[in-house]
Length: 248
Image (cartoon, rainbow, N blue to C red; front, side, top):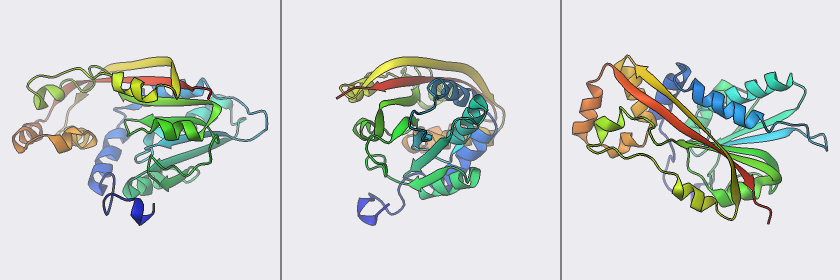
């Protein structure tokens, strides 16, 4: 990413935050979220008439957990019969470095979500998992038949942790996302993944906190309450929304 397009010296997540995310995800706590994404994307997998590879971008890929598991699932689903081109981009060079260690057959790049290095109308799937989204840019790079898969917090996501952080815990809403997509995409399906989760070690709890925006938004007193925990019961609740590109 060119220097004049950066808003800070090292944009995106820091090495410590990336390491926390890798430790947490590699313990399987979000495997059910990943499985839900795989099923939604897998339902769209098909051979292209021109014989080119089915192309997938993870926009805001972090350290590569979701895209690596998706690629392996799709290969298994098709028996390797359908060629795949998988791409992951993130604004954090530290995240992309870790992602490249996960899977060297995937093309990883440091890039800004608002200025993606892909030709217009070149991709079959764009997925965006708990990351900033630019619907105009996603619309530009998707084929007319392409699909956008957005993963966002459900109404009760991380309840348990949120009740410690906020005196009054409000449920997440999705109206803003729908407004941003209006005119560019049409919601076709929404799949909710919801399950209880128990963390039994302080390191697991702190790794989860480091993955969330709460890490930057809480005061020292609240952070010390979380740091004192050795066990935490909470709820994972996410919505996997699938959008059709609106024909222009």
